[in-house]
Image (cartoon, rainbow, N blue to C red; front, side, top):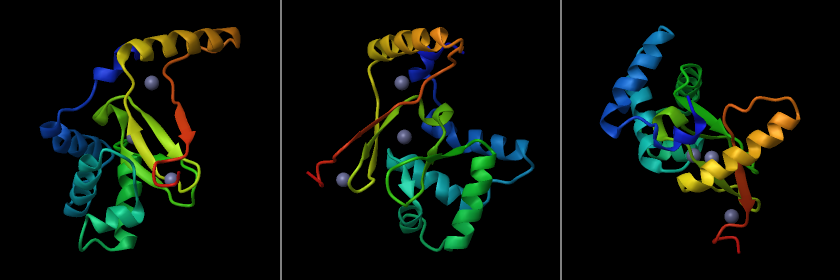
Amino acid sequence: MGSSHSAHEHVAAADIAHHVATKLSDIGQRFTSGRKMIVEALASAQRPLSIPEILQSTKGLAQSSAYRNLTVLENAGVVVRVITTDEWARFELSEDITGHHHHMVCSMCGAVDDVRIPDTIEDQLDAALAKVAAKAGFTMVHHRLDVVGVCRTCQ
Ligand SMILES: [Zn+2]
Ligand SMILES: [Zn+2]
Ligand SMILES: [Zn+2]
């Protein structure tokens, strides 16, 4: 898969449930109602969510069951854990569902926002990073970059 095309590769909103159900069944798991609530919360958020935020938008789901279901969804490759600057783990749907993007992380409060970069700039990033990698004898497959700064609320 060419990384320069990855910005456009994602699962259409209507197909997310089918995609998730398939990935779960690959590891012998079912798409239970609790998992559906979590996937729907993450799909509508447009940014990574912390456990308290996930619990807020999945009324009736116990915290222990949210943790358990998130672990299963992570193991299925459907959900990924996002590194931030505060103590809260944050979760989002994987890039093969949402498409390639980056994160803006606030160093004061730990808030994370999704940010999509125009394809021309993604291509320039890929070219520059591939050169850096090649110099180190490393073959680049794709890249992950965060923008760390101070969010509007904290300024
Ligand atoms: Zn902030
Ligand atoms: Zn994201
Ligand atoms: Zn990128």
